[in-house]
Length: 635
Image (cartoon, rainbow, N blue to C red; front, side):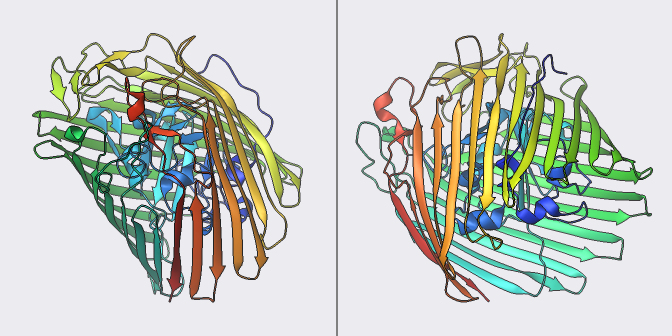
């Protein structure tokens, strides 16, 4: 997951509670629901047992509310700012998100099935691409670790970690078919099969999506070609878990994605197709050697091919090996330690730029629990790379519960880093499809420091409220400066970037069966790059809320709200404020058939999703009012 100042907090709240399901709050360390793997690799720790700021997304509940994309799901997480609809050109290319003012492209590390998805040698996280193209149908777990406390993951996790897992099959074999059609020639179909057969548990799923988006501009015009913003995505996911013995298991996963996207600027001469293909394969052997000692070995491969039209493409090939061991010394003390090797090869075939990086990481975490209701942890990681000097990340955390576990107080502090990539440090220039980038051999590594303090309180039976105060500082930030739209260079920022604020939230249900309930989250952030400048791609205030009810047996309906104030674009220029309302309904006809309907952007707001510097009339607007409906069949 040192800092020169500390922050004091009073209340936690739905920031974690509304996103995790109610059983997770009561589960023990060995149960799957509350596992926060992103905060403590190798351990099964409930989110309410860790001092780090972690939100475990309640994926089934989000899908019942008509949320099927990761982009929209992340808008419900406190401290996270993201554009509804997918960022650039709504849905398809990238989805820019920020955690507490820190950008996803450089500060938030995506991890899927234990595999880091980043281009280390190019100093880029693939978070905007991963978020834009990931749906909830093939996710079994998704967590957001906020702040610099991702110590066990090293570089790229300065602002947080986005952890995702392919579902594990369970129970009797079953199949689920999801279909939805809607505005802008949109269709989404998903087929999943899962279950257990003796010692084998399996999950296999495939999703297909296409849409034309709603490509309209601030000057009131739209693309004459209705397919100018066309987006098509096909992805498949497979997970097999085999219990070799009572104490040993083997898990293998495979994920593949093929996406085609047509960028839709007003100037048709700039329109280029994007093709994005990824393959991810992992294998993990986990064994309990003795009552106190367990070990796991993970091997992973991630390949990405990205093409911007004919003749302009790059390839990324990452390999990862991680060996993790855990030993329990006694009831109060246990240690997790291991070794990781990451190899990242980047090849830009259009400009003949190539880079290769090998990173060797050594990590350890010790946890000390002097009482049943008080947990403490200290984690550290040492990374050694062939491209830069050795770097260390650190995290300390504490967590305590009181008043029959109705009150929880937690705190954490961390240090992270991001090293400039080989291409960024080169003395030459390299060409992307849109811009010429000039390297800077004098670039330094950037670092971040983060502190969280908070408390969660059950204010009544079924109702939780609270707040988390946070502070994060980024030093020597590596900036991309655009001398013009087609010419850019890199530099370390002179001023320190500081983001501080508070996350408030409230969650509750009005009956024991959770047929009616609500959640509210509000984040106030001061994301300052200098005395007079706000951090790029950030927002000062974010709201997220949902109210749902079941007035008739099997019928659930509700309203959702997302809003942001004081936001900036990628150039740190001020952008317009926005809010968007959504309505959703779901009717369970029987155990096998469910009908669902949703209306997005009920009030037909027209806020900017993609700005064009120097030409505000060409700014791209959000999708207008949109209607989607379909059914889910289980058999």
